[in-house]
Image (cartoon, rainbow, N blue to C red; front, top):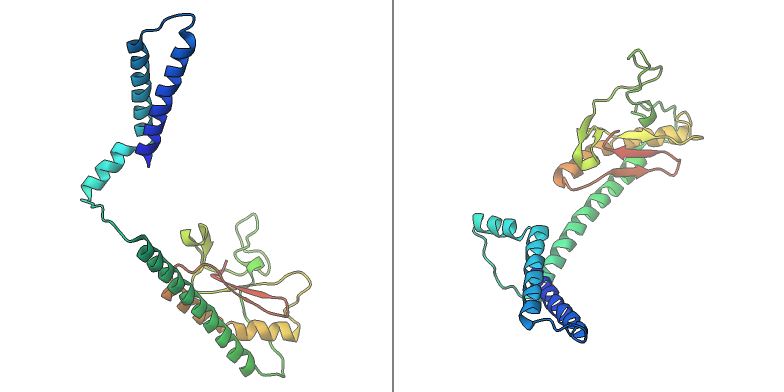
Length: 218
């Protein structure tokens, strides 16, 4: 592709210089050889510039180092193979979502409908909050976090999830508390999904009561 672009630029340069030569011929007779030399110099300069920009020599060297070969492929077959790979990838991710749905339904059904509920969970807005002297602030929770480049280089915990509560949603309301309590069982599935497919990004469970459980914990 780069060679075609450089070849077109070379031809354009030659035609441009020839046009200049023909337009100036009325006032001054420029020798044909001189115009030809201009065009050749212009073409060589373009070629060298193209080699520097595209790093063609470096690419060729790397191909020789790995002993790469150019193989002719059927374009239609290649597209079909790529389409199948994309389909398999999407099916794998859909299966991960369906496993979460099924597990959430089972956990919700098994949750007792009556009685007090006091869930123990990690709240995102309380994680690792410290005051100026380095001590934990009141109500803060500690969670071990490590920087993970797969999750936008953020510090996360790939073994636990954390709950986000918007303003106006209280965890002492029974429906909210019950949802937080039974949804903690999704952590095992979150971890299993991520271990089975490390390309997975954030996993969520959103409740109709208003809270959101997010994995990994952050």
